[in-house]
Length: 478
Image (cartoon, rainbow, N blue to C red; front, side, top):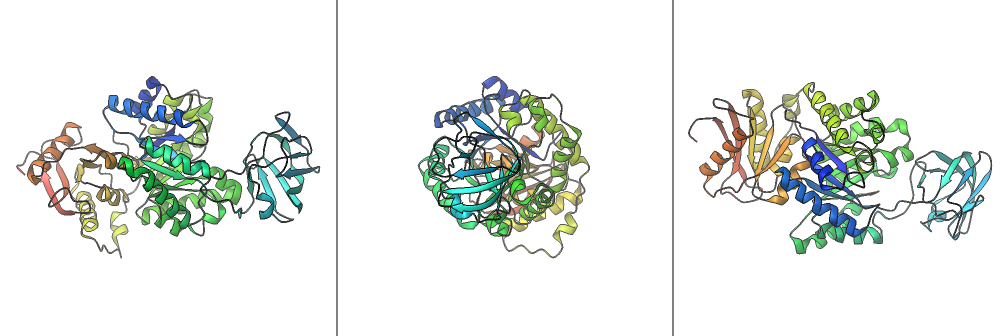
């Protein structure tokens, strides 16, 4: 069956071999995430080469996302590897401390003391440990443990409510952008952006790094800071897509606030013609178990029903015992949820205006396919914009985006309900349309007598030039 929702999976020690990766692609993997918080440049380069080779063997393109580490604010190292914090006891975070002990620990972000005031609450290790700030003296943050537990090397720190000033791009991120574009990344995910400026700077650096390779990657803003929420629209406008990064976001705004924020972010992304990925702990139990929990099934299904373009796996596929089975389970959940989705196309079109010819053609194709009961929509597209606009609306009709550009094919791997395919289109329109029909028929999505809706630009080969809508019955002469 045609699955509309895409699957992003992080690859790591459990999934880097060609055999496992090929199985993951056959199971439904659409985009591979390279997590630049871990591993060396050579590790990522080798994995990217393996992805490209496995995709070639599978006969389809798989996108590659480079996920930057960003300014992850962490404690330093302990002389014994960890300590145990007890409620009510004092503990010091000291920017000048080399090796931590039972009384204090160092900081990798030396400016943290400047950001804090008495009364602030610090959340460590994804909120498991809670510290109340009582005073700040020079490089030292004096706290009292509110909720204790074991604290080990390099655990993360968040300030409740956000407000830390660390820049979105570190020196490491800038170097990692160069590495990512050299290995041919299709998307760059920026961690902890606060505003549009963070994304604009990231895009500028990525475009410069990609220029020698002819790559302009799609830029993804990971929404995980509290201050990103009021700036969400401007961040969306400056990005190609967003990620609902529920881990750090939940620590900053509170777990209870995240589900409503997820729905809001997905809705805003779709209304802004941007793609959206829902991430963090979606199938967490499958790190160790061969089947998901009922709650995880509901979580994935609800993200699909919210309209997310993609759902993402992290440790489940990077380090878990069952990376292939996890993708199979996730794909099955997506398919089942999509069956029950209600199309509200007519409602979506009320009070909407389209100022561009190509966008009007895309919307006309959706409307026509929906009301004629077409078996497929076929978009001959150069940049993929036509397919993106169509994918913002759900009508239970698969969209096939045929493009001569490999880069566009990989970029569209994240678009909901879009199957990107390579087609060396002829300069003759009728020949190209006939080839497009043959591709869809060969994939089994349409047969003789079925209605197919086609969009194309004339003259062909010009980005943004879609200006023609054609309705055909398979088997008729074009």
